[in-house]
Image 1: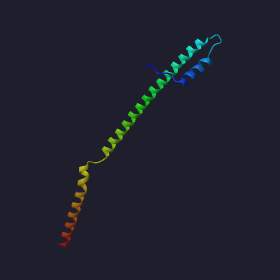
Image 2: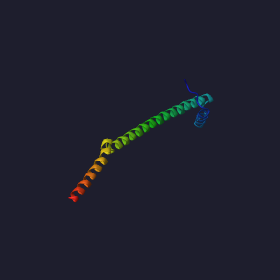
Image 3: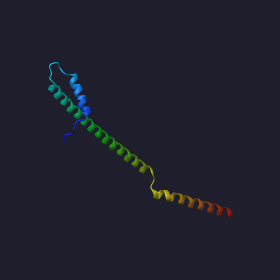
Image 4: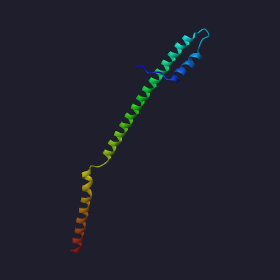
Length: 108
């Protein structure tokens, strides 16, 4: 399952191999050096992709943890629903009892 090396990588490797070529070096030796450079480029790109995947995975985990933390904080800040619904009714009844009591006391 060896991946074929792109033409760009081959051209770049050959350019590098020719740039570092010694005067007594044969074309075959230069070709072998270019193949080694191609493999090095391929390995470098493979490592960079793996590194990018790992960084992306870590970023997603951090984002998920942050969202979970924010969700937990919001849940803690909200009072329970049962306390929310009874409080207005209790205040309404208490105010009516107070009005009626004050009216009855003023009438006497």
